[in-house]
Length: 154
Length: 154
Image 1 (cartoon, each protein chain N blue to C red):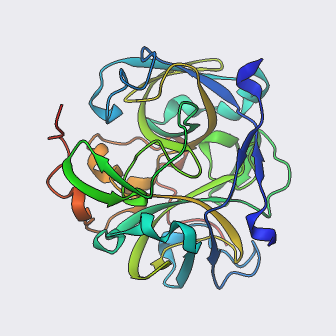
Image 2: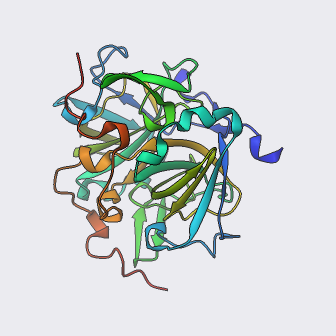
């Protein structure tokens, strides 16, 4: 079946963060005050033009420490098993990570950002402008996550 | 350099939409009233458990019609050239698409959604819960897109 063919990606950069392993990375980056540096490889620098005028960007990256996955998973928020695709677990069939981060500064091909939860050395796949808040004017229901965000267990 | 190694993905499903080609697909899916069907392959169905309790989901897919890219691009919103990574152009080094959609219903491994702008037959890579509105309580600056969303030229 054609639609099941493998697809190939090449990273466009690398993420430098203070988190040396998955245990050090926060469950949700938006709580973090740490500054991470997103290094976009030089050959893609032109694609960042005017990026510094955006306050927030969407960063898509490769969970390079992820190995295997389960379709039902536990999370820091409760003791129940949840469908993998209703969670942000890094262990997924396609190990793609996605975080909305605050863009602090750009210096040529380096973006300094706040709110990123990626481990140091994470391959960067894509950056998109954050226009989700515009797209999403509807009331959002959070399923099993309702009322749990911000109160994860340690 | 290790970080530049190719990465391999396998789709977890396929998107069925009324848009047979890129010309038919809307610039921004959130304006669309069309219902699309996201078929998650049967072997991943368990990972959708309780998904129907979420009102919105993030869909990540492969721009399978994309060929090549330019680092400076024009958009429907103005006549200027913009850095590729400040746009949602489907022509990107990593051709990953991302849309926040409204989840209308789930029937086993099929999700019916509103607001998706993907072309029929698009490979599905991942689904994540939409908690961006929670993550993003800050005022968002839209760079060159400020004031232009919703008024794209035909």
